[in-house]
Image (cartoon, rainbow, N blue to C red; front, side, top):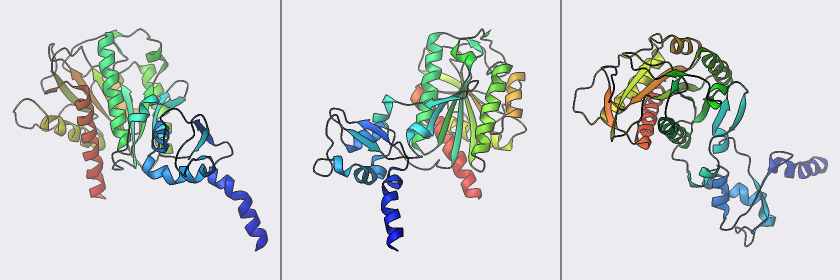
Length: 323
C-alpha cells in the first residue's frame, strides 16, 4: 500500500500539469488570473481553480500574480485557441484564428458544443476590390467568433490560391450563384474537410460559405441562400438561415419557402464530394442584376454574422429535438 502511495506522489505533479512541457505565460502589467486565462482562450470561471492549484507556490496572497513571472496555463481542449482554427488546405497548416483578440472574447453558451462548422470565403474565384475582400473577411471572422463562443469547433479553410492572389475570374452577375472557387481549390477543400469530418464522426457538421458579390456602399444589402438539391441536411440548414434573414428583412413581404439550389459546375463538385452538408450565403449590394428571390437586410457585418449564427443554432436545436 505504501509503495502505491509513493508512486502516486511521484506521478501527481505530472498528472497535474497534464503534459511533460506545460504551457507557460509571463504575467504582464495589469494581468490578473482572469485576464491571463482569457488571453489564452480559456474560460476563467471554469479554469480559475485549476490555475490556482497549478501555480499556488507562485501566487501572492493566494490569488495575485507577480509581474514578469511565468505561470502554468491549464491544458484545455475547449480553449478558443483550439476551437477556432485556420487551416491552409494545401499545406495542412493549422493556427489559431484569434490571438490578441482573445482578451476581449468570453463564452456565451455551450449550445453548439457538439457542432463542427467549416467556413470558407467564396470570393477567391472573383476579382474583387480590397473593400469587398475586407467586408467578406469581417463577416467570416465575426461568424467564426459567434459560433465559437457558443461552443462550436470552427475550422476556417483557406488555400494557397487565396493566399497568393492567384488569377481569378471577373465578377459576373447572373441569374444563378457564382463559382465559389476554381476546381483545384475545391479539391483541396474536399480533401481537408473530409479528413476533419471523419475525425469528428458522429457530431453535427456543416460547411458554410459566405460570398460578397460587390462593394456594399449603402445601409442595405440583398441576401440569397443556396443548398444542394440532393442534401436534406443542406436544405434544412439553408431554410433555417433564410428564415432568420426573413425575420430581419427591411421589406414587409410574406415568407417564401426556400428554393435556391446550386447549379454552377464547381460548386456542384464541392457539394457532391464534401461530406458535411453545404450552404452558400451570397451577399450583394442590390445595385446590379441578381436573382429574383433575395432578402433585403441591413448591411451591418456583425448583424449578418449574428443572423447566420442564429440560423445554425436553430438548425442544431431542431435536430436535437428530433433525437
